[in-house]
Image (tube, rainbow, N blue to C red; front, side, top):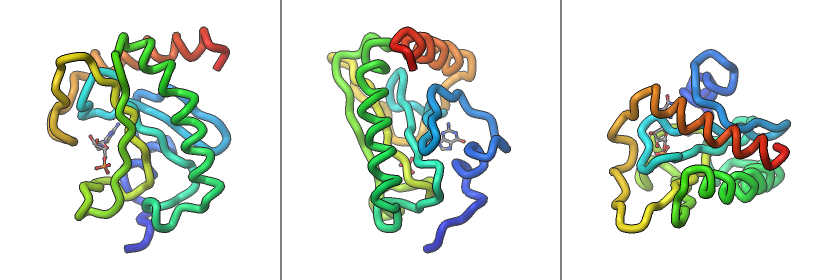
Length: 143
Ligand code: 5GP
């Protein structure tokens, strides 16, 4: 399957759909998942089109992983999490539902089970609060 420029994340990247953005640089973009598996669940994308691991340019992939590395400790601390899971799905058979490459940063809280993948929409107000807390922590870190 080729890249569909009308997938939801392409629309978010073009500013045609809203999101709770937390970070952006020249090559990457990060925002909160609207169906978070845990508080602070964040998605990190390359700006360049790529369906998944099978077609992404290595330079683009490096940029995304750099951003994941940059954001993960700040999200963990801002959300008061105890640990973090990093996930990335390739193809529908593996659980991929949006076909623009992305990494999931999922904070984990001791004793709190993860919600199911992509099933429970979070209230916009709560997403806005979590995004504001993460952005404030990023700003404090000079980002
Ligand atoms: P995938 O299964 O492709 O790895 O994950 C796609 C993720 O995108 C899911 O966790 C799902 O909750 C999230 N998602 C789907 N549609 C939207 C949307 O319109 N906005 C945001 N922020 N997240 C979305």
